[in-house]
Amino acid sequence: MSEGTITIKKDSLWKYSTFILGALLIVGAFVFFSGDRGSPTGNVVNTGTQQLPSQPSRSQISEDDDPVLGDKNAPVTIIEFSDYQCPFCRQFWTDTLPTLKEEYIDTGKVKLVYRDFPLSSIHPAATPAAEAANCAREIGGDVAYYKYHDKIFEEQNILDSGSPQGPVTKTVQFGEVQLEQWASELGYNIEECLGSGKYVDEIQNDFADGGSLGTPTFFINGNQLRGAQPFSAFKQVIDAELA
Image (cartoon, rainbow, N blue to C red):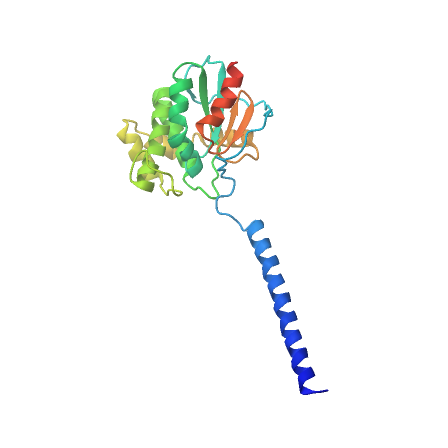
């Protein structure tokens, strides 16, 4: 066999090997980017660009005895399953709830019911925050509950981006010390109540009712809406219910 023949075969082998290597890299990249790589957000849902179904499925979700914001006799009920440490739940509070409150809740058309869905495996402060909010409710009813609800999200925004209404950029870490301090700033002493664990069963009942939901998830007269949706998504479903 001549040297020229060997050189040609070596060149062919090199080209063939390069082709195989390139193909393997492409397949590997596809698997990496399309597969589940263990995202740290777990069941936290951010679907702000999600298209709404033309006929949302209705679910029979109980309000339980959870705190109500708005007129209890409002024709439309929004049940929110939420996690106090979830960044997308906070994004809903920052970006969507103010307009929702102004246009529908404060006008008596909609009431909001908050149910706890703490994803404790990734959000260790979620259950203590839910307990703390229930302790505030014990002191001052639903009005106190929602004042403290707002305070928890507001203080996380400050820790996150330096402003009460600032952008949501990450999961914020906090604990019982901060929860007691924030309550104190509103005039609520929750220290003894928070340490008692008296609301753990209530929170777990909410969590069980939520099943396999992500956070946040909303039921608007039974129509499910998932994720940190913009106001327009809520408006579409609410207006259909009011028609």
